[in-house]
Image 1 (spheres, rainbow, N blue to C red):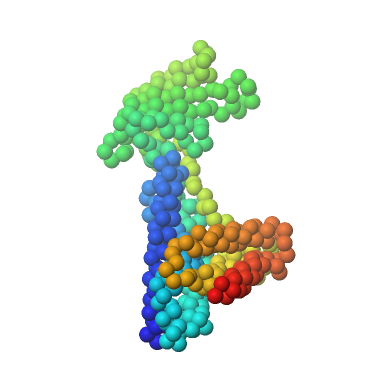
Image 2 (cartoon, rainbow, N blue to C red):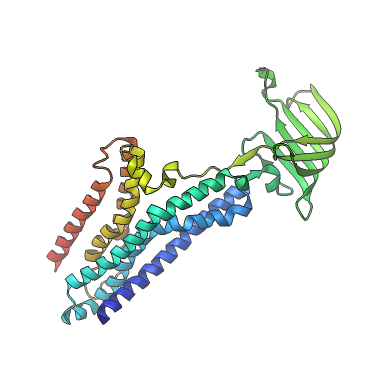
Length: 364
């Protein structure tokens, strides 16, 4: 019992350490991605924290099997390299008991991942999609203006520049706005016609009817014409109002990822539904099969470096996860039968486990 607790603690500590490091790295990558979206005006800053928090369960479901895999390699690899495992076996803690204990840990992790994949992640995906379709995630060009910098709208038809913003970011001074005019007459000579607006001040209002934001400019001039040609108009105005383009960042996850597992099972004959169904179970099963691979790989000779095995081990993981992605794509495209689906990838991993185990026994 004491030995079992000791081995469980070693594997768990390594699992948590690896998972936390990987989660932090991937989460930072997602933060940079969302900050880039906010910088170019795709999402408002007030939903950044919510979107980042939505990524945590999905990342955990992917990283927990990898964390367990590397945790076993690091923990057991150290025990083998320091001859601790040999001493434990001398006192009767044989390979079978180690196998049973490790598979019990793998089963617990697999159930946690399964819960994330079957219930938590679909709920999170639905919430993300709801947020992206709501007005809270709608951004407007004026909300992301940076003083002293030209900024284009997502559709490329508007370019805005302001010299200075008030402290509450409600009013802009010395506004420049370029708008590409729509050619409703299909006249080729008007395809490059632009409208340039220069104003002393600008501020944002909300349309009382449509609830859409409007940008109002005061005391300025409007120039209309084709760049490079002398045929243009100059209009002076006291107040000029425009409706700036809106850009909702659509959710990157497909609709299938928001569906409950029961609905996926009902539509299992649909290749896309079957692909999503098998993907959720495959990620949970990956914790089991990665554990099977890690057990023989972690058997190191005394004084052998435990880090030397990490490179081929990571290569095995990359091949495994890529095969799962490929198999999912094939299922969704109908390229392979649903009955075969993604299960053949797990079969390859089991065969690889048998080969590695036989090779390790021959070395012994």
